[in-house]
Length: 135
Image 1: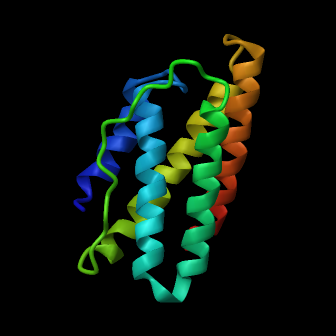
Image 2: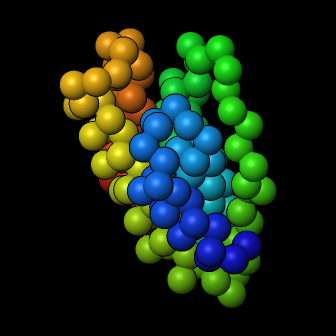
């Protein structure tokens, strides 16, 4: 995996203000896949990465469970290789933190349907938990 997928996913949060949109869901999938890949490569902190990944996945599930038209993210799941795991760790942490802030801000908006704002708040909680777990 190249690190540009992580950077592109984070950048997409700044250009797509829709928390239910394609860019946001793609960023969630990239974060999840990256954390799972880190868990497979980072033996000392595999449990932390796995827990973080599962929290991200749960957040994605909360996001999409009541949507009728779920966009299909186009990103291939990133796979880290042992040569770039050291570089990737801070990028994964940054993406998870950016996602948590993005969904927290979305949940606090005055606009948006109340049931979607509750879903976004739930996603933010899962991402906050994931951010605390990432080593």
